[in-house]
Length: 101
Image (cartoon, rainbow, N blue to C red; front, side):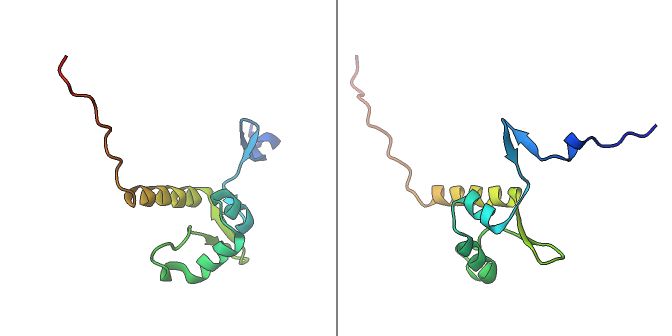
């Protein structure tokens, strides 16, 4: 006896009642990373020509639709955070009272 997939397994995954997507449109990806759709389009056109920030990786489907995978967006955000950490001087430790008791 073969089993068929239930309609539940075909529906999007949810976490805490919020839909978890794997692929995003340009507009959705822009919202996800806190940028504008036009910024993402410019990054796609310039690509690696902008060594300081090439933007997140994207996929072009056979039909020509551009999608961004959540994994690529998360990796991009993680890289921004790591780069941000390297551009800041570490905070000086607080001076402590070192008098002997």
